[in-house]
Length: 117
Image (cartoon, rainbow, N blue to C red; front, top):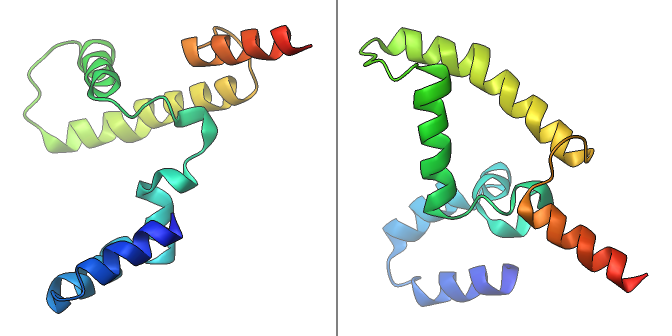
């Protein structure tokens, strides 16, 4: 990862304004952990495609917003903070502890692990 970033910086160093922006907003220590795959938690690595995002968006609209047109931003923020965040954290902890249904990725990893023993 670091080698690739260095190559990117060298290639685009002819654009100093862009590089200043990139370094300030994307390479700051905390920011890099949020967007780069090198620092992703293993449990969430299967959520990289548009299909997963579309599926989650559909769940948000169906389960939390009841398919109603919601024009109030304060209500949406309340639902995201009060309901969605709690459920997301609960499900993430459940997946990390291998409790409940396994994702297809976890199931395949488990099969591979069992076949090796």
